[in-house]
Length: 166
Ligand SMILES: [Zn+2]
Ligand SMILES: [Zn+2]
Image (cartoon, rainbow, N blue to C red; front, side):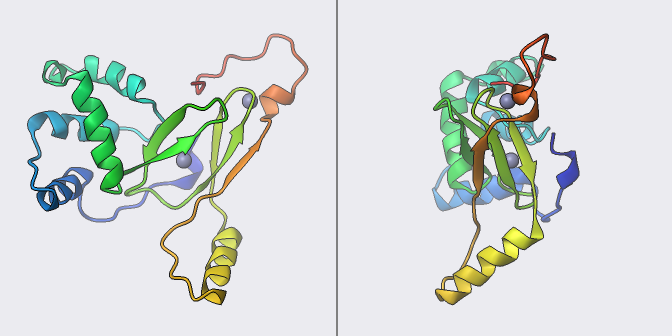
């Protein structure tokens, strides 16, 4: 679902970036945390912590990873700027990469929760212009458009199963 956005190489790997962040918090990058970062960045998917726990349980080296440290590590990764949360209309939040991945916005279906990613230069430059009109130093922006996706707008009858559901 995000093929059209491509990826961006920012130099330092997510693991390196996380290690640097942890140093500022006087914490160590344990093997457990490293495994979690690797797994998170092995694919660009929106995920809930439970999805990640499932993926980790399929790794041969996952026995070292406890559920509580997944939650703690995700919160730290968010603080480090590696991940961000996207709210879904059902009140549940999903994580997505916020590092090494281009700026983009979301269309969010309030029926099925599907997230569609898009990037638009015009929006980016409008935001930039508005910020500069207010002498505001823009760091990033977030645009979430809520509505109904094409599948959910189709008349109800044998809808194809959407794999990207919650
Ligand atoms: Zn939908
Ligand atoms: Zn996204």
